[in-house]
Structure formats: structure tokens, C-alpha cells
Length: 318
Image 1 (cartoon, one colour):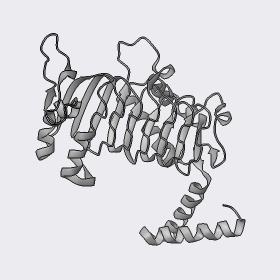
Image 2 (tube, rainbow, N blue to C red; image 1 turned 90 degrees about the horizontal axis):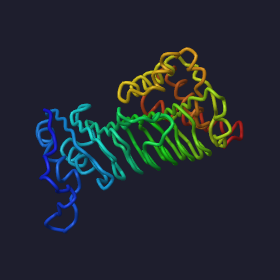
Image 3 (tube, rainbow, N blue to C red; image 1 turned 45 degrees about the horizontal axis):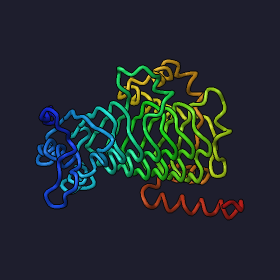
Image 4 (cartoon, rainbow, N blue to C red; image 1 turned 135 degrees about the vertical axis):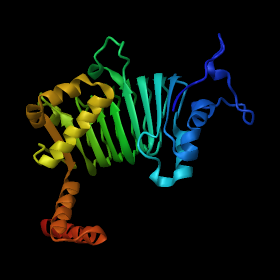
């Protein structure tokens, strides 16, 4: 079901609409998205919509996402059940907290806090095909993108501002460059950076894995090494997972840099730096060992935790 936002009377603006109860401007969700997504909310029917967006449209998708969660719980809806494609500049907190089953894309750019608390949904940002600049050399989303994301996926064709994926605990995100303090305090998920980072990358990072494309070999000078190790991607299964993420990025955004990396994959793979927290790596190694012994579930986690504590006591690490 393909839907479009209502046409506006000539000379009018979308921002004159007020709520009757509070005299406040209604959000884009309340004006359009809830009505457009009504079939999906009611019976799970797939819907698509195309709408304009400007920087005064904040937290787009959040109210709709709360209705999805209210109706379908933490499981959400099947992937891509609700798809809204926006053109323009998204305001702050675009796609905040959106759950599984929602896919929101922007052709244009987005402000700070895009994907805050992302909770299973999918976000895509890419420049207009009419743009004349190189996406991988220009900022397309603002600061603190994907702050506290817990699950879901996102693909950003261009550079993000500072504090990208801070406190990310489970989302998989691909971007083409980040500012200072990327992946700060990250505890889970996967972040792929197909370009340069700012200084202090991975400060306080205690979980998850980041992959930084570093053909010039300069990333080590911008990474905070207090809690992480810098490695190459040597495991075949992990390499295939990384390649799949980059392939998805190319598919959703038509990224030139992603296509170039995929085209020369055998060479490019050796140019990725695998950023993994020291404690996280040690714990995952113990989990793998107990799985090899046939333990699963809580028993495996408990056995791995005990083995980790014994190693820490023996080596004096902390």
C-alpha cells in the first residue's frame, strides 16, 4: 500500500497546525504518520509513504514507534512493514527509539541525535542523487547519532558528527566517517566506519566491535587505546559478516566508497582495523570454549564468567 502525504493549500505551510488541547504544534507523526500507518497498526499490512521533511520536524517516527510497541510488544512487526521515505532535512532525534518493523529513510540530511535509542528499526540517510558533492567527504548527520541504540540497523552515506554511537549496546551501523569520540562507552553491536575518525575513538568502550577502514594506516593515532585492542579481521565468518554489512550499505545508499571496497575486497579486508575491548575479547573467548564443551544458555555464561574471573585472579589483570 503506497501512500503520500496530503497536498497543502497553495501558500500555506505545514507548521500552522496546532493541537486543540495544548496549543502546541503537532508532530509529523500526529499530523500524518499515524494515519498513514493505520493499516499496519491494525492488522500488520505493509504500508509505504513518501513525505517532505524539514528541520522543525523533530523525533519523527517516535510516537508511531510507541504505538507499534504498544500493539505488538518488544517483538515488533516483520521487517519493513512500515516504510516511510522522507526528502529534505530531518530535525533532531529522527527515528529515536523506533522498533522492529519500521524503516525510515531520508534523502537529504539529518540533525543531532538521529537514531537515539534505536530499538530494532532501520534508518537510512543518503544525499540527493542531484547533489554535486562527494558524500564520503561531507557531513550528513549531526552529533550524538545513535546514542544508546539497543538494536536495529542503520546506513549513513556520508560523515557523522561527534560522539557517534556513544553507549550503543546492540545496533549495527555503517557510516563513512565520524568526528571526535566515536563509539565512546559502547557496550555492544557493530559499527563500521568506511572513512576517517576524529580523535579519542573508543574511549571507555567495553563491548561490541568496530571496524575502521584505514588504508592510510593513521587510525592508531586517533584511537584511545586504554580499553581496546587493534587487530585485523582474520576469522572467515566474521569477515563475511563485515562484508555483508558493507553490501547492505551499498544496497540501501548507493555508496561509492562501499562499492569500491567490495570491488577490491581481498585487498580492502586487510585495511580494516578491528577495534575490540580487551575484556570483551577475553570473555567471548571463554564463552567459545565452554560452547565447545557442550554448555549452552545460562550454564555457558556462568562457566565463562567463572573462567574469566580465575584468569583475572591469576594474571592480576583488571
